[in-house]
Structure formats: structure tokens, C-alpha cells
Image (cartoon, rainbow, N blue to C red):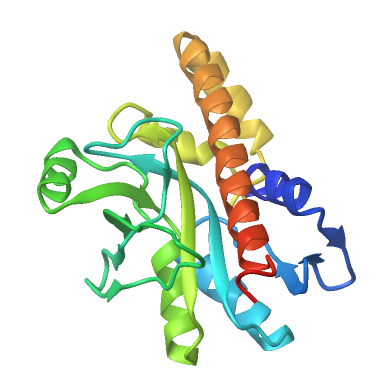
Length: 223
């Protein structure tokens, strides 16, 4: 989403180009793109990116919902990412000395029920998102290493499931839906404000962690 992408643009000093965003981290050339929300858009965006540029590594950066031991603000480097629809497991190839841990599940259903969440926690899952497995699937079909940096913005079961309708598929705010939501459910305003602040903090944390990984990877000691 734009709210996840802009902190990354700032952290990496990316510049807008005719085809997207680009920059450098030392000798490492960077290209960046937004995926939009959900597995279909994420897969399509990854295909476009890999068609347009020669890429050695793909990094997914953004926010996620937490479960189990996760807390709001945690930055996670998942050891395993699972596509809930197919059950396919993907294992990232992290940059640097990252200690990957925990399992992340990707699915398109924003509103996860408590029983499903409990079952996933019992299997070692610590986070859920809507894009990473889709990106991983495209990368692995093309033989390109990938990794993920996610920060927990909210906890599964705490955020109302219908808030996903307050954003358009590309992640921009759906103004009409937001106004209707606030007019019909004004008691949710404090929670939504808190959610927005936590999401902003998580997006900044994920971007900072990704930028640090790239700086470390570009250091003379590693090249």
C-alpha cells in the first residue's frame, strides 16, 4: 500500500522514474514497486517487475497482522511462508545474518476467525499477510531468491474484519466507504485512530529494517 511504500522510498532515498522507483545502496542497484492488496495483485506486480528488470533478489517489505507470541511493533523475518489456499510452503533466502524464525501465512480473507487463529498458532505461525506467498511463488518459479521483512501493525482478532473495505485494491483510502463507516459506527473512531498510528509505526519499522539489511549487504566487508 502507499502507506507501506512511502517509508521505504524515504529510507532508501528512492527516486521516481518512468517505470517506477529506483535507487542504490552502495553498489547495489534497487528497483521498487507497490503490489496492491491481495495475492492476485501481488503476483501480477511481481511478474511485471521481473519482466521489466534483471533482478538478483526480491525483498517483500511491509506490515502484517500478528498472532501467538507477536506484539505490535515487532519486526519479523519469517522462516517459512505458507500459501493458505494451496498449502504450499516457501522458504526465504534472507540477506545478511538475519535470524529467521516463525511461520507466516498468506491469504486473501482479512477476517480470520478465532478457531483458525488458534490452530495456526499451535502450528508455529506468528503472522498473517495478504501478499508474501504470492510474491514467493512467482520468484521461485523464476528461480530468483527472495526474502521478507514484515512488521506487526495489529493483532488478529483485535482489528475488525470489515476495515479492509476502507481501502481500495491498490491500498489507497476508499473515501466514500470510510465516511460511511465512521458515520454508522462512530464508536470505532478511537480504535481506528490507534490502528492508523500503529500501522504507520510498523511501516516505518519494516522500511528501516529493510534499509539496514541492504546497507549491511553493501558494506565492503561483505562484498
